[in-house]
Length: 421
Ligand code: AMP
Image (cartoon, rainbow, N blue to C red; front, side, top):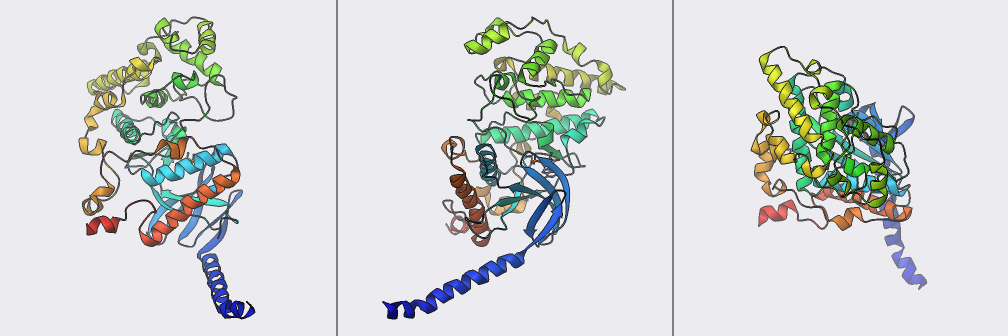
């Protein structure tokens, strides 16, 4: 056996050398830079990092990608597997960003981790298209009807695409929508997982909930037009320059909803579960205000007949979006056809994917519509230990790196195989 071991020594040595070489090579590919309170360890191709935002998951930087010769955004997810909430969100985001391809949904350009093995695995970096500002910043501005309706149109196109992929967002908000100075818009995230705990009776933790629909606040069943409510809140805020329903918590937020829109009908109450219904029925009764009162002419640019017409159309759209009872609320398709929005309607665009026409022409199967439905089980019903999450997320990053090397993701058809067919 000693002879056997000795004869294999060169093999062990070779494997070790290969490992050391890869490790050194990898280390040479990265550099470390402090941005704000955080340290980014990124591939050398990304230069000139500057912090541009921060969210629940971490810091986002702009950078210049020397390889693609363009500016990009890099988001660092620090130890995304550290707890269920972080892990589920990071994993979902990673998987969905890879699947979903639409001009109004942020596109993923690269994914990497500077760590060399599962054992050492800590951080994930997501490289995305770079936009100029989030919608919070745009809300401060006085926009004309053309820009306002174009932004709404793009939100609706993005939402429609998510719905077609089986993703109902439920948590759209201005901080997760980004725009460019040419008025193009992209949605940054994929909202709440189906199994995410939410509702009046849940423990509050600090997140923005002003844009969540009554069915989310009240823990009811929901359908696709749950996202229309959020768009209505965002439009209202762009017009008023103030948050429409600024509740300190869900209870306070429900008060803000009924104070303005009025106590919902008995028909609606019957759809609530018993404990929530008791609460909702015992609130003071409010008549609510008309939409002319809620959104008077002075809030809109009304200097011409054209603008007057547009203001009344915008108000009409608001009155159809901000409906407490989802069964009476406008759908995404109807909203896209509403007079305020349909000026932009382009069937190719409503369905459009991002990417150049040449790519679509060469690889039509990548861009076929509707988008693939994501298997629910894979994403929604997972509860895992930190170790299991770590492995799942690491595998997603590893698969991406492998795809970049080979042009193939395991378990999915190779683009070359399809071309050869
Ligand atoms: P997030 O961590 O995804 O919630 O992002 C936090 C903030 O970073 C956003 O509200 C934006 O202001 C900014 N941000 C994130 N991604 C991008 C991007 N791709 N382009 C421009 N700004 C971004």
